[in-house]
Length: 161
Image (cartoon, rainbow, N blue to C red; front, side, top):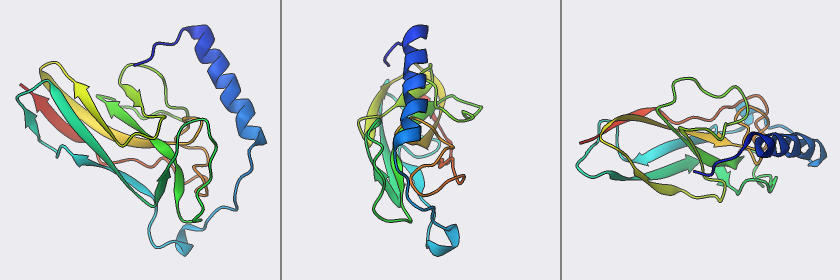
């Protein structure tokens, strides 16, 4: 993970807030107009997975989501799709209220990655995906779905022996 000092975090958050005022937004989609709401999910490992290795590959999935890098402010072409990027929550019990922190347990995939390999010590871990907007916000407008976030996967539990 990238370590950020307090000053860098403050500058980043100011940039995010100011940036959000200047980017255009589409007309919000009515959820009733769309066959399926956007969703994110963990393809693998499955809930209850036990690894004999410290390296655990995690594959991310999404439906009705255009995965875009952080900072780009791209809007999905399909009004029933969300636009954003993945964040993996490791052993996080309380979801972020808006912005996804750059703290331990919150792994950001701002480059649009759809998989990772975790290097974990022996123990039990909970894993959950959350979709973040281009400014790492889980509840603000994620493309057309204003007020309909956060988009979360089911939480899974894995064990590393």
